[in-house]
Image 1: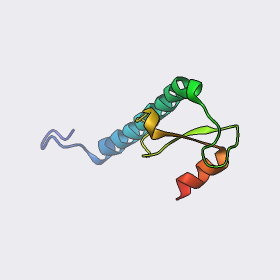
Image 2: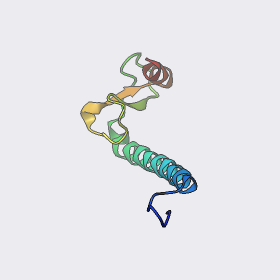
Image 3: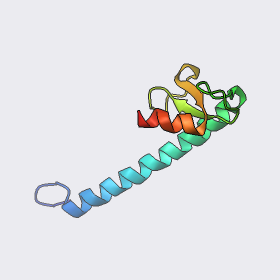
Length: 85
C-alpha cells in the first residue's frame, strides 16, 4: 500500500489479480470433483445421441449450480458441441 494515499501499487494489484485467478481455478476444480462424486449415481447415457460414456454438462454454465435440473448428461463430442454454441 502507498502510505500517502492508502492505494495499492501496480505491483500489488498484479499480485492480487494473479492470486484471485489461482483461487478461482482452485474453487472450480474442487466444485467439479465434488459434483462428479455426487452425481455418479445418477449417470445416464448421452441425452443427445445415446452414447453410453457420458459427462455432466451444466445447462446454465455455472459449475457451482449442481442441482439435478441443471445437469445434462452428454458424451464428449456432444459436450464439446454444447460449449461451442
